[in-house]
Image (tube, rainbow, N blue to C red; front, side, top):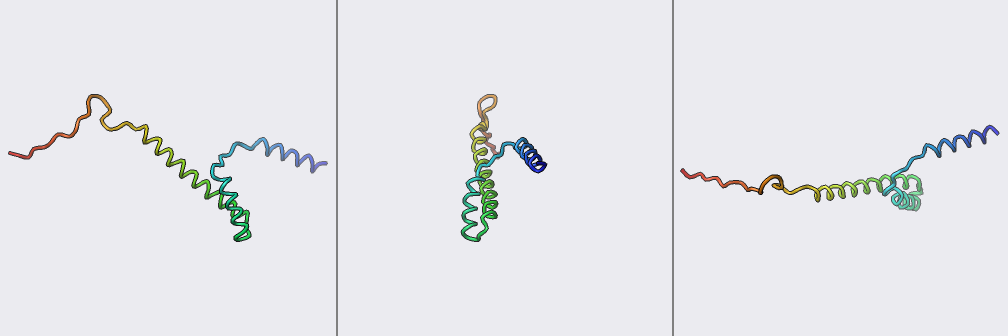
Length: 95
């Protein structure tokens, strides 16, 4: 009876402490890595972990590129401040 009570208490504590996880890229990478690891090296778990890490890295890279694209569209062009935009004056070196 004590084992059942301990197991149920641990289950409740574990379920209450679980937060949301961002798994962009991880699930797809883990599936592909697990299958490849299972068939190629008979190490499915290692392949799944490596696939998850690789998938997360690719998802982060893609998100970073998307943020850079979004930032570039929000930046104002040079000279959009006060007054009309003015170019550089031509220098004359004649005496």
